[in-house]
Image 1 (cartoon, rainbow, N blue to C red):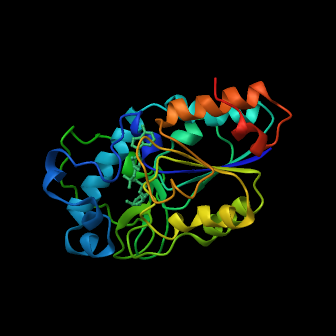
Image 2 (cartoon, rainbow, N blue to C red):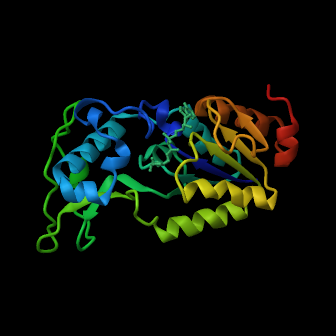
Length: 256
Ligand code: APR
């Protein structure tokens, strides 16, 4: 079966990484993430924004993939063609073993020059010394490849375009899938939030896995009010129980 998963911050919540709309802590507590993750914030206060991303990168590197990430990777060993489309900038899907991960909003553990786009190896965003638990302002390093550029996180900020290759591949994967699972996303941020509609319009089964209701819940074929780890385990139990079933037959079964 061609299974596509669209994941959001809730996918990494059980790994201890706060969702995007969780309150921030430490130095950043008085800032709104949606204000920090913008080109204007970086222009106005590059040390605050670079320090925040260095702190987030350190937390991601200390985190571990959870049972949800591991379960998604295990789907491939069950013989299914799996594409993960993620809004997350962490690398937990890759570390769990997923082999096809499309990052719509970029990658936290990577940086590039804000002028020439060049990357620096080893990447300073994950270099020692690691930020303290509360984080601190840090001046972004100057680019070693051009005159005057400074490094910025390799993520998509609000107001910036998504990477064409990931966006086009995501649309193609959903347009050809047998089953779409939407895991741990509030569905508030476009254009990613528009992706499930491609499956719904084609009549492909859509399952939402989220402890809370979202705008997709009433449109999906099933809305499992579960955390990601338990929702993915339910999917695996259904697939193992009926390896030959198609997605609609699977969804008609009572989960064990
Ligand atoms: N398992 C599954 N879902 C969970 C869990 C969990 N353990 N814990 C929380 N959630 C759900 C929340 O109920 C919420 O619906 O995860 C969702 C997280 O929503 P957001 O914090 O809005 O994160 P996300 O949807 O990924 O945001 C999308 O917007 O903020 C920007 O670029 C940022 O990539 C992010 C994008």
